[in-house]
Image (tube, rainbow, N blue to C red; front, side, top):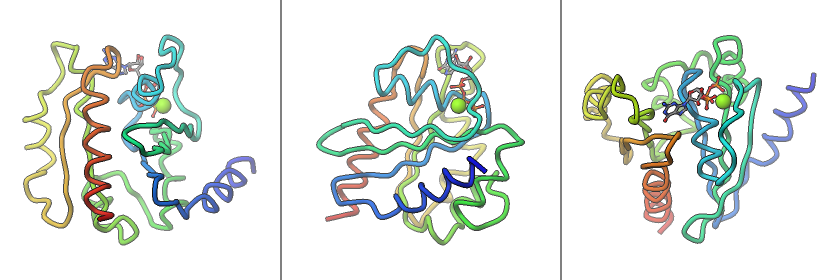
Length: 168
Ligand SMILES: Nc1nc2c(ncn2[C@@H]2O[C@H](COP(=O)(O)OP(=O)(O)OP(=O)(O)O)[C@@H](O)[C@H]2O)c(=O)[nH]1
Ligand SMILES: [Mg+2]
């Protein structure tokens, strides 16, 4: 299928040169991943529909080429995540952290939609996800609004800083 073709291309892209950073944007549907990615690339965010597969976008930041993979989060798409990781369900952060192929990879959690009064604050999300128990890698939680762009670049700056530190 087209999807399998895409996956095989993505697998070939796996070896990433030094100045390039591969970022997986994972999360449940409607979380704002695509909006965040488009905001990052300074693209129009007014006509975004649920992602039926992948979006890949490259953005330059701090001398890095960030190759961001935005993967659809709808329940019917989530099973495909495992094609990439060759693992079963990866619905939980804990499972992602256990994934051998992602060992030591810095983790950034975006607490998105902070422009909404009903949004859970980052501190609450950090507690709910037990982030303080993560000891095997650097992690960060970043409040943001993909709608206004607030916090998005700050999050990516942290990513660049962490990748830099890891490669030195
Ligand atoms: N208020 C508010 N709405 C947002 C924000 N970010 C995204 N949205 C809205 O949330 C909805 C879903 O956004 P998407 O970017 O499509 O979400 P997604 O995570 O890519 O969803 P899937 O592709 O289905 O996995 C859209 O209506 C966005 O406009 C935000 O920071 N604030
Ligand atoms: Mg999307």
